Every structure is written in C-alpha cells, then in structure tokens.
Length: 114
Image 1 (cartoon, rainbow, N blue to C red):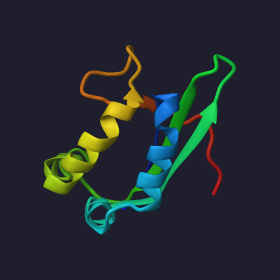
Image 2 (cartoon, rainbow, N blue to C red):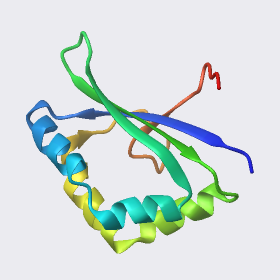
Image 3 (cartoon, rainbow, N blue to C red):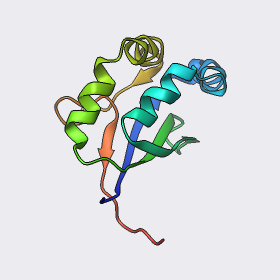
Image 4 (cartoon, rainbow, N blue to C red):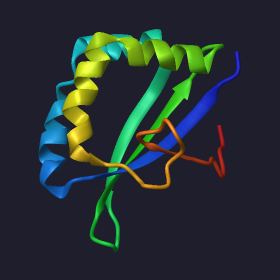
C-alpha cells in the first residue's frame, strides 16, 4: 500500500467562516463514514487570513487505497456527500486557475518527513 498525501486550497467568504466552523464541528456521521470508505484518513482543514485580507482554507488528507480515481468517484456519487457539498460550496471562492474538474485547487508537496 502506497500512501498518497493530498493538499489543497480554496478561498472562503469571510462572512461564512463561523458557519463553516460550526458545520465542521458537527460533521455528519455519514460524511465521516464516506471518507473512511474512500480510504481517506488524517483529514484536516486549516484556516488562514493572508496579507491580501482574504481568508483561505488549506486541506490535507492521506489516501491509503489502491485506486484513487475510483474511490474519489464513489465518494462524489454519495448522496450525503453531495448534500454536504451543496451546503459548503456557496461558502467557497474557488481559484480561477484550478485544474479542470477541481473545486479545491491542488497543491504540490514540497517536503515531507515521517
């Protein structure tokens, strides 16, 4: 099993930060279960205001499965995940230069130490 580390970033609307925090503090059990079934673990989201005065979310997770694309497709097909995204997406301001098919913009890993 090869571990895949995934980092991504997206802007969040300043007036949505508290709602976003509350939502994630009370994450649905079905979402946690769907993430686990998709072989995602060690999932974290961080918030930071940058000098441009905008707020950004940085997410990190580890993938331990064997078919990332298939597991992500199954995750995206989950009705509860789609409902969760329907709540979260209006809070986000995705980057205009993100790759096709991305909502959160992927990031390149520069360094890692176990």
